[in-house]
Image 1 (tube, rainbow, N blue to C red):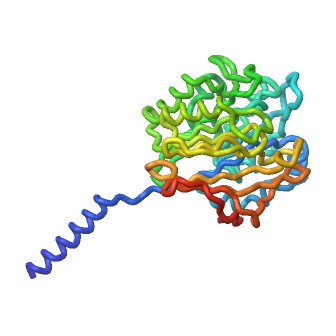
Image 2 (tube, rainbow, N blue to C red):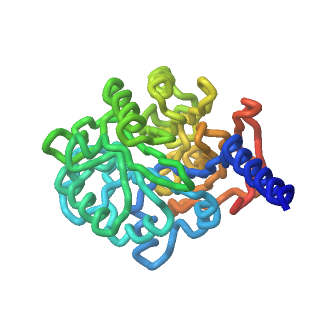
Image 3 (cartoon, rainbow, N blue to C red):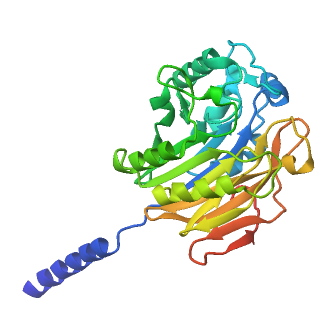
Length: 329
């Protein structure tokens, strides 16, 4: 009898030791898509009752967390600023955003197209419909505050920054607007996300670079390294309207531009292609990433190119490769 009790005790103790020695890995997948303009033809499709995200629904739902850049203001008020292109979407688009995305970045050069009044209206509308957002706020502090998502035991901090003119769209102490990308402020924000918000993973989503450039410029490369040195686990970028190159710095991925995702104002063939990039993270950072190619039609609506291989990477090998671009996986 004593031997049976002792055996049971040792078995339980060994099982407990195994749990202590090898804690279960916390796995989360985070998918990012690029610029989304829900004005013009995509907006008209939504007005007719269509869902322009439908072709990508399986791919979007394959990730634990879905993030996109909202390249327009959502409002009914305001006056168009003096610039070449101004985009304002109707509030009817918010339920579709909420259906397909867990959070959206407002940090770009079109969020302020109709002035602070429209930007403030958008913030109110998003809050009322519980559509999470980051990279913009009613004041400077709100704009630079990280959006925290807790998933599978991980705390993930998302930060959004714009550094493409006009800078007049920037939030200040008493004006609604976007978070502008000042190096010292970005470094401070990343450290605050770690230390104050206790984030396990920190990812800045950038709006930077020059349009139609297929290779990232020196400013992008310098700032990406600054952010990773400050504690970012990955850097994701957009704005150039084309897919740019990628690299790994200190074992952490930098994806300089994922291109467009939804817009009809396209100038060339390269602008019709974008990436949905999916990061696979655990408590130690990004373990791998893969991409799905979005092909945007003349109406500005994306469909996946499921028969075309696309870029992927894993930390174990440290090498970028080409992976099968299978829809919904």
